[in-house]
Length: 438
Image (cartoon, rainbow, N blue to C red; front, side, top):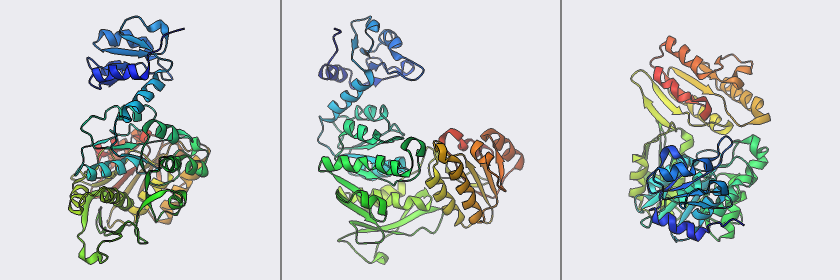
């Protein structure tokens, strides 16, 4: 019977390694603990000795034949060992843990909430979108003694995944941004998405924790019916009540509280640098979370106004020739529709839409792409370029290309100027490259 290292023993090595973890031999840090994860096309057990030779203090494998050094230790499953280590580390802290999930806006909400909470707390937040079964434990293992708040983003493309991530993270607070048509294929339709995302509410209920809920979203409010809720929205007397004051390209808002000033004329406007009217509710969510944790109103305002979108999300880019609304990090039917609706209301004499395929829709793909085409026509948007195999298959009046590269060549020859341009598409389409010729 092989001798497996325990989580507690592994934890002592992790602490001695100054909490340095690595999973890629191309990015090794001397002294770190190397976890030999497996993927569809690789088995990192094979690189354990290389990791030790390169200066790692320990390598963790799950195949006994690769234990070729006293610094290589054996576990039953490397991924599960990494997750168990992360949970063990999380349990050393009594700080608030807020988990964020949803079909759209997870990362934007996480970044906005991090911005406002950072005004009062030393926060740790998920880097980029490391929000899956590997990214979440790696994020947790980055928590240091000085941290006072943890914000953990959770992504999912099938039922049960949010529950698994909650078991690893053990959050006491939760926020679901919305429930839409992302990953329809993996979840098995809209009802499957609703069931999968709401796993966060159910988990928080078992912990007697609290959830932040958009009260104007009937689906979310109904799903959180049995939860202890902190609410935000515009239509009722919520814990935090907002007003959309947007009159330009970027979101502006005001907010008050259940017990605060009710005359919005007496409240100051928060002018953000984030585009898209659909981001109003994300800004209000951040204000709600910050207010609950007693961040002062003026600091919330300062944080929201200074927040600069990045990573091709809700960015306003002025190129000298054109104004670009860049929202090309990802796309699904809900976020695509919201972006089009928002863009249709823009005041601009010359508009151009560059839209790429939406991925992971499975059998729903044809119909959902057709609905986008129908929406474009309904909104009388004519200057449209569609990119990708799914859009290309459809019979529609718009210019279309199979690849982003073909579209890039077309735009280069077109020499576009003085346009307001929306760029939107799924990550795999890499629509952001179109900026270089605009």
